[in-house]
Length: 422
Ligand code: HAM
Image 1 (cartoon, rainbow, N blue to C red):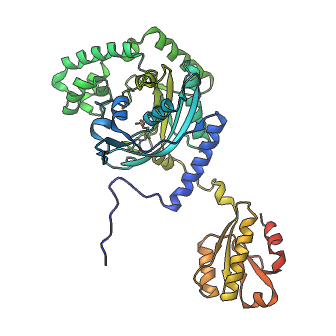
Image 2 (image 1 turned 60 degrees about the vertical axis):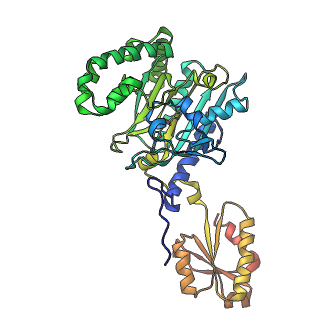
Image 3 (image 1 turned 30 degrees about the vertical axis):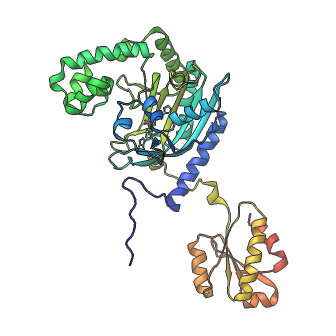
C-alpha cells in the first residue's frame, strides 16, 4: 500500500457536516452586511511580505514569529496573509476605492499564522472581516459594534462580552508608551523573558501578559486613558454614550491593546468564557493613519474580524440553514432502461429549480441497496423506476420522511406531483 500524505499541523479540512453550520452562519452574516450596506471584497491569500511588516508591525508576534513567508521564483519575499485588513487597504489604494468616496467592505476567508495549535487556535483559520473607510466620527464605530451585536443575536449567541478601550492618536499613544516603558524599566527585575523583549519594542503588550506574577505591577501601571488627547477622549465618550443609548453593554478594559500595531483611538473585543484560553471571538478598532502610511489618501478607517472557528463553537443550531429546508429527492432505478429514464427525469426535475436537490442512484444495486442509500442521503422523497414502472409508463413516489403509502404516478405527471411537495 502507498504511504498516506499527512495534513499540515494546525490546518484542518472542513468536512460537509461541519460546513452545513458554516453555511448557515455565512448566510445570516451576509444578510446583516446587506442590512448595513457593506459590500464584499475578495483579496489574494498571498501578498508581499512588506505589506504586513509595514502595517501589522515588525515587532508584533504576528509578523516576527508567525508569518508563513517564502521566496517566489523571482526571489521576492511573499507571505500567506495572517489577517485581511492590510490586503484590503492595499487593493483599495490600487483601485482608487478611497479617492473622494467612503467605503464599507466585508470579506471572508482563510488566514495563516504559525501559532501553537490548540482548541480554538489554528494555523489556518477563517475570518469574517468588516472595514469602513472615510468615516471619522464615532457613529461608524458604534455601527460596526451594533452590526456584530446583531450577528450574535441572529445566531442566538448570548454569552459574549464587549470590551472597549481607546489608544488615542499616535502622539498621545507615544507619550503613554514612553511613560509605560519608564515604569516597567523600574520594575525590570520582576519581568519575565517575554516581557523583557516587549519592554524594548512594544511595552504596551506587557499589559496583555497572562503571567500571574506580573499582574500586580500591571495593575498599578500608568493608564492609557489618563494620557488620552482631547479629541480621542471626546470620540470615546461619544461612542460610549451611543452604545449605551442603543442598549449595548460594555466593559472598559484599559489593558486592551490588541496584538497588531496599527490601531488608533477605539479598540474593542468580544470575548466569551466558554472557549477556554482562546476567548476572543471578534476584535478590531480604528486605524486612522494606516491608509496614508501605505501611500493612499489620508483617511480614517475602522474595522474588525470575527474568528469563524471560534464563533462556530458557540453557535448551537445548524438546522436554520435554508439549504436544509430545500427538498431532497433520490431516484431509485433498477435495470438499464430504468437508469436511462431516471437520468432524463433527474435533469427535468433540476429544470424546475426551487432549490430541489436531486441525487440519482449510480452504479446499480438492488432495490434494497438503493433504498438504503436513499435513506442515508437524507432524502425527503424517493422516486422509483423499475421494470414494472417501465412497462406501465409510471414512476412510483415514496416519502422517506413519513409512513404515507407509496404512490404510482403517470410519468407525464411526475413533475406536477413533485411540485405539490414543494
Ligand atoms: P485579530 O485580533 O488578530 O485581528 O484576529 C481577529 C480574530 O480572529 C480573533 O479575535 C480570533 O477570533 C480569530 N483568530 C486570530 N488568530 C486565530 C487563530 N490562530 N486561530 C483561530 N482563530 C484566530 C485581526 O486580524 C484584525 N485584522 C482585525 C481588524 C479588522 N482590525 C481592523 N479591521
